[in-house]
Image 1 (cartoon, helix red, strand yellow):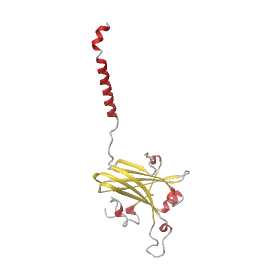
Image 2: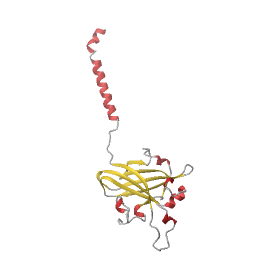
Image 3: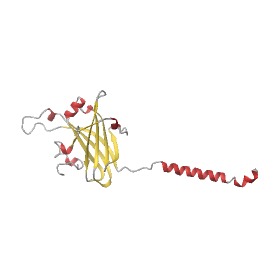
Image 4: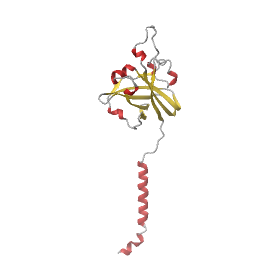
Length: 204
C-alpha cells in the first residue's frame, strides 16, 4: 500500500512552500502600510505675553492689563500644496489634582501652503487661569494637547508631554476659555506671525 504513495512524496514540500507563501502574503496585507503624514506637529510651546501698560484713558491699566497673558503656539509642517479649512483644536488642563478643568478652543486657517514652520496660536486671559487654576502662572497649566483636522478629518495630534495618547478625551470640555489671536488685543500686531485665520476681522 505504501508503495503507491511514493511518487506523491514530492508534493509535501511543494504544498508546504505554497502554504507558507500564502500565509506571508496574508500577513503582509494585514499589516498597515506606512503613510506619510500630511500635517506633522513639530512643537507645542507656552509663552508669556505682556499687555501694554495703561489704557487709552490714561488712568492706568487694571489688574488684568498688568498681568501677562498666556500664548500657546503650535508649529507644524504641511505636505498638501494648499489646505483650506485646517482646524487646530486646543486642550488645556488647568488646576491641581483635586479639581481639574479642561479649557478648549479652536481656530480654522485658510490658504495654508505646502511647507515647514507653519504656526498656529491661541491665547488665555490671566483671569481665566486665576479663576480656574488659582494662579496666573504657567505652572497652573498641567498639560496641553493639540489636534489638527483637515476638512473635518483628524490628521495629527500631540501634546506637551509627547504621550502619544488623546488623554483629553477623558475630560469634560469647558469651551470659551481660550481666545483666538484675531479676537485678542494683539489682533493687529500678531497677525503676520501666524496662519491666516478664517475668523479674522478682515474676512466677513
